[in-house]
Image 1 (cartoon, rainbow, N blue to C red):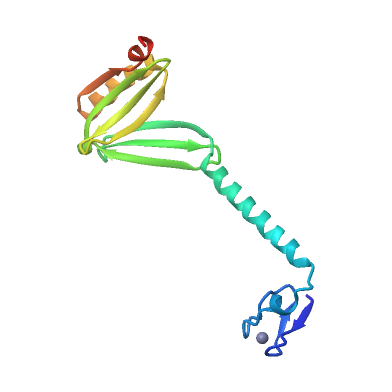
Image 2: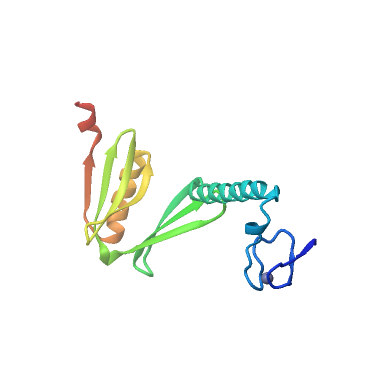
Length: 159
Ligand SMILES: [Zn+2]
C-alpha cells in the first residue's frame, strides 16, 4: 500500500487515511488539492445507500406463510411466520393470557385475532373466511376460551 509521512509526528500512515492514527493529524486540512476526496465521499454515500437498501429489503422480506400451533405441552398458542430468506419468527401467547378468540369477517377475507387479558389484539391468521371461521372455533375450543365473531364487511357494503 502507498504510504505517506505524517507532517505532524513523522509516522508512516497509509496514503488514503484522512487522519494520522498516531497523533490524529488531519491530512485534509493541509492537503486540499487531493482531487480524490469528492470521489471518496461519493463512494461513502453509495455505501450508505446500499446498506440502507439492504436493511430495508430485509424488513420487507416476503412472508411465505404462517402456521399456528396450539401447544398443549407449554399451554401456549404459537405463531410461526416463515420468510423468503429462510428466517422464521415465532410469537407465543400463553393460554392464561388469552381472554377470547375473535373472528372478523371482512370479506373477501377473514382474520382471526387472539384477544389477550390486557386487551391486546394479536393477529393469528388471515385468509379464506370460510376456512378461518372453522379454524377460529377449533382454536377457541383448544384454548378453552370463548369465540366472538364480527362481521365488518356488512358495515362497509351498506355505505
Ligand atoms: Zn501524526
